[in-house]
Amino acid sequence: MGLLDSLKERATDLAQSGVATSKRLAEIAKLKAANMAEEDTIKKAYVELGKLYFAEHGTTPDGGYAAACERIIAAKAAIETNNDRIAQLKADAEAAGEVVAEVEPTQVKDDEGEEQP
Image 1 (cartoon, rainbow, N blue to C red):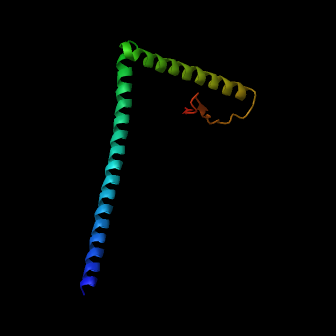
Image 2 (cartoon, rainbow, N blue to C red; image 1 turned 90 degrees about the vertical axis):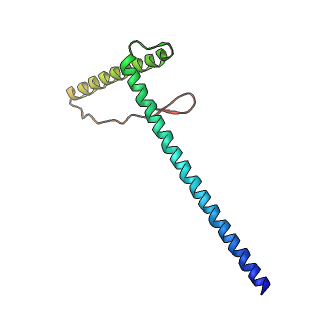
Image 3 (tube, one colour; image 1 turned 45 degrees about the vertical axis):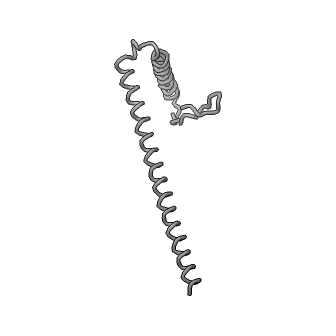
């Protein structure tokens, strides 16, 4: 009976070890998911902070912020120009009796192959 008891004890130890490992892995996964959620919170706060800064100081940014504010201002001007051109093209099409279909924007890739909105 000594061998049988020894095998039972060994099997119990292995099962308990497996349970402990599973609990540890589950906790690690849960903590990683929590970290991802916190990183998302940080990103959202950075965006909000940037929007607040731009709203308050966009026309007179401090040194290090000037380039970013200029890019935002230039992008907003380009969007306005593009929207004006879109409206003109639609008006021209409607005046010519053409059906104006909505066109979805395409994704443009930058030099590194990243998609740009």
